[in-house]
Image (cartoon, rainbow, N blue to C red; front, side, top):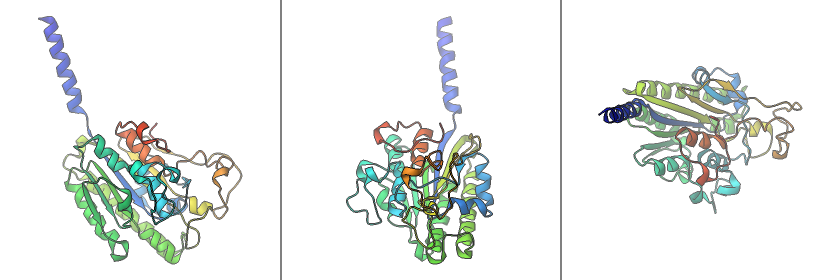
Length: 311
């Protein structure tokens, strides 16, 4: 009788622990062409609030080709262009089928999860393979505002296990006017992006079951910019940001290690990362690795080039 009671008690305890676990949710927010150095220096109260419980860096770098096609492929798959073969915006002869995006990986691992993607640069849809819900509208047609409202409603009301939201207006302002804090149009779009982030956080926090959910919020960009373009190797073009925030994360900013001074307009070759201390900062490849780590998905089959910032 005693053995039976002990076994029964153990089952009750196990069930209680399982029942008490919070549902894990993931939201990735991407903003095209947003320099980390500028994001750090202008008022972004909603992003600042996130960094209080985040591992983050405004000195993160694009350690590949500073073009959107390779950049977003790096972010969404966690592997570099040597593997996914996206080297420009044409996506010709790519190997994305062999290196799935993190939403596809999550869906394959957890078929019961509901995944969604909202984006205004339509080639993002070439990178994303399996997504339960897609909402896409070209940025030139007021796309950011459109997909933003759709994403807010989705996060407020739906299961929303793993979600990606992409905004393009900051990059458009950079191309049209310049990728600099002193450029009013670029400045304005980054402030607007911060408001979008605040809306997304409000949507999450208003969810009926919020107290029983644990959220991981990740943010990054594909590249920086120099004058009105990108694609080169200046620090301004490599300069991105990475934020990995969560309910249970202790805040920590990651900055470059010791090295010679490097100006934003100076060249930063990948062979010189260690020399200037930039081997110590996150890259866009770390986003997917952090997501898989958070969801207890074994990264080994995907040959990721990034590393989890949750370690």
